[in-house]
Length: 434
Image (cartoon, rainbow, N blue to C red; front, side, top):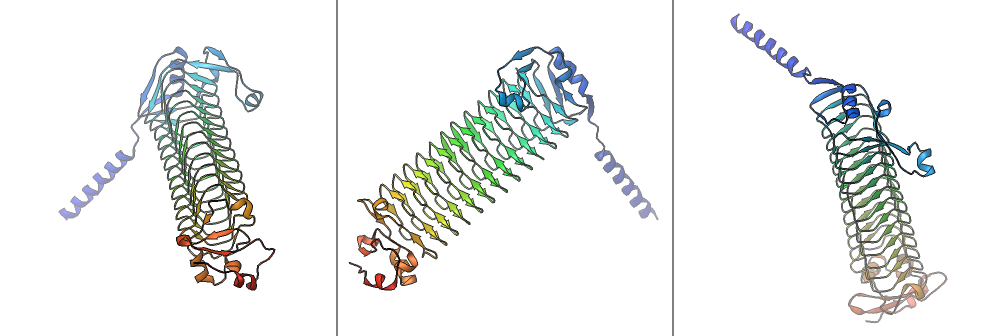
């Protein structure tokens, strides 16, 4: 009997302890108190509290500074009159149970929302952060709008969680922009944004579309090991410094149409699971695609590789189109797997192109114009003998319609001269000199 009573007491104490643990004993602060401090220019400093109500600047009597906006900016909702906030804002590890409306404001001092949970929407479009802005590991449950915002110094969104759409379109990042490890649950808009220094998106997860079309990365764009779960758009994006996409995973479409890479571009070990488009893109320095996997159609039509292009160990499981591309430096396709049709029609190799030890071609390769494709250095294709062994018929299965092939160890042959169509007799007549 006593043991049963003891068990009942223990269970009761456990229940009480759990209830107390579940209770929220954080202090509650009204949003109106914070707004009053901002209006008076007093420091705002809260840690581990609940803020009830909306933080809305519209009703505050604050100094105004005039800025020039374009017509497009005005139409998008950005004001030419910005309210000046002189208060340093330090709201960390808090929960804001309301909406944030801090658009068209100038924050003169540091802004710190580290570990804070925004339960409503966060509207900060057109605002200017003159000093450090910290949103480290913050959670945004509603939509976030930083459209046209300016971050003059470092900004930290590392580990932040954006539950819905996040809009940074046309924003300017003057210092280090850290989004490392952040998660975007909705669509992420960074179109036309300017990153003047280091832009770090390492290990970010984009659950929705990621739009960086027209964005400018002036120093270093780091997208290492990023996961793009939907489509990724970098149409006409400009990478003035190094572009780092090593280990990135593109599960949807990857659009780099007319992008411009002025510095080194690193796609080593990247995974492209959907349609990939680099058409009319320019690579001014070495382009590294070593060990990259392309699961579907990849379009490199009219791409300019002004210096080297390295595709060693890459795997093309679908159609690979390099038609009219220009390779200005040494080009490497060593140990490459081609699983579908490969088109180098009218491509221009200014230096040596190495295709050594590539796995047998399961599709076809076209090189249609020997004048434009093969220069005085020739095209070194040391895997042709492997293809011949696998398919027994170079012209039919390997698909050369012109050009001179230089085999392994400098062996010359076979000579597939320009012809209208291939047939077995033509191939049988070609000889291999050893």
